[in-house]
Length: 127
Image 1 (spheres, rainbow, N blue to C red):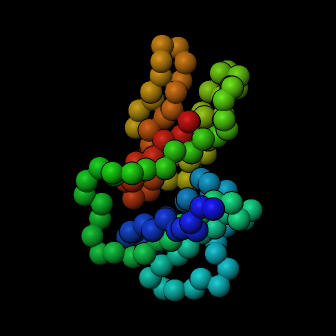
Image 2 (image 1 turned 180 degrees about the vertical axis):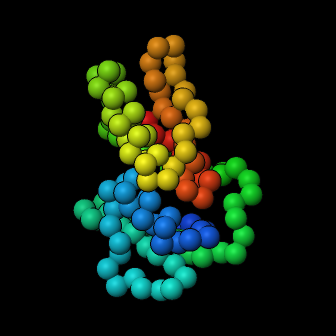
């Protein structure tokens, strides 16, 4: 049996970052979590870990050592044209929510993933 765990994140603006990641992952605010210097989101289906955001005074200063990969296309095998369309649609949605696209990674003509930054500069990928 797997251990129950929560991903903890530092943030300048915990509520803004929680709202961004809730949109990105299809999560919702954690019921009953009401602290002025933090925010928490959960998987509404109870399968994924909770993600907590705590206010810190300093901005991000270095590359993440870990990051989230948002796998919009699910698991292989993939229809590659449909997979690319799903990736590009999610990237557009996240840019509108405050993310920045940094670079696309591909293997020739096949889009593998897009590296992005969340609103506070944390790297993540959409694949």
